[in-house]
Length: 118
Image (cartoon, rainbow, N blue to C red; front, side):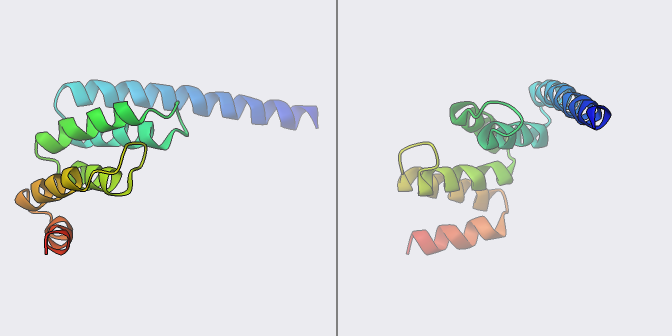
């Protein structure tokens, strides 16, 4: 039984180290302009399961990738503001991010933008 507990502990430590290393890779790629990795980091910070939850940091990363043309981040930002996920609800900001997603060619962003602006 002790061996099983020790193995489980070692595996969990290995997963934490691996996650920390992955985050460093994502951060480096994000700083070099790989927008998908900025978005992925945003998801990690928003989720808070791998590292401490930090919605402000998540929003900062989503804004960076949205403003640089990654529509998935625009969609996530719109949901954050539309539903007040860690921030005050702000329908105008949500609509702006949906409009940006639409401009970037995101069809679901266009549909939702049209629904909210009727």
